[in-house]
Length: 205
Image (cartoon, rainbow, N blue to C red):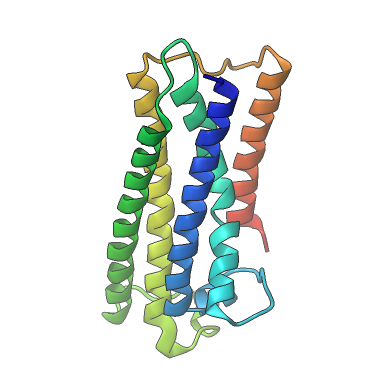
């Protein structure tokens, strides 16, 4: 088996799964509270269409997440000397993770809505006046749902990578200091992807 090709397949699988989840997720939350995207996020597209906004953010916010998860998962599941993990098994595990994320997002969204409705939590001061009062509860629901998706995606992704690495006998997937040009490029791509995710989600204005 061509390990380089198998690595690419795993990475593309993770990207595809993350983007598909993000699009479906954001199609729902954009209709739940469009202000979550138009007020609490910088504009990606000049439109008020929930469909287009959900599509744009569904891709932009998850593409790099899928790539960042795909690289280490590909290394953990395909690196020698153990036989590579079949793509079908990896796909099943990724689908299970996405399902858990969806359930967590639903329950967290309901929780956020109820906490806001009961007056236990309220919007941050910067958003309180910028968002119509009738949308406050819905905004909290969208906020909680997105937070749960990221949290469960991060924890679940790390668990999936680590457990697969353990099950395959802890193959040496990457040294601390890359010893070859391909390894150096791979390390740079992983670090860059992680940096882009942090910048895009927390520092982009």
